[in-house]
Image: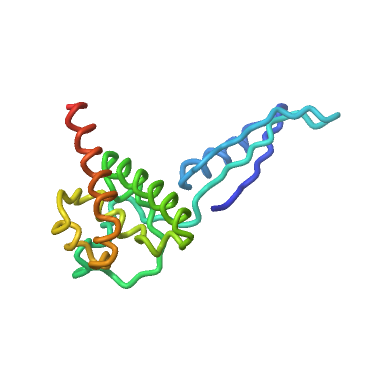
Amino acid sequence: MQFQFFWIPVGDPATATATLNRTLAEQRVIQVDSEFVQNGQMVGWAICVQTTVAAVRKGEAAPACDGQTQPASTAKIDYRDVLSADDFTVFAELRVWRKKRAAEEGVPIYALATNEQLACVARERPASKAGLEKIKGLGSGRIAKYAEDLLGICRSADRVAAVQR
């Protein structure tokens, strides 16, 4: 995550506003905070823009869940760009579960599942342990330990989607 700071003077905002707007259009923005500041001769807006460091460009494919066509890349992936809105909602729920469960067990989050594996679960929405076995890297130990939680989140998401239709 990166922070960028902007000063937009009230007297002549055009140039600074154009720079801010360009940044907002080109970056994946997480949050924008602004504060009107009046300090003697300095009157304007102080703006803090929080952005992601790297993202997969729109239109690029997400890594394959079966591992067969997955490129060897260390580029960060912005799963908002590669998952559908519904799949990203499930992915976010899976990440919340993973964080809570890892804290309970006193292990790092990646010991439960990687973001890539959670994205595959969100996209595939397996209905059984056999479906989870198709996801590269989960393994029988993780499936035995976490299948009920993972499948429960998928079932819950499917019920919500059915109600919304």
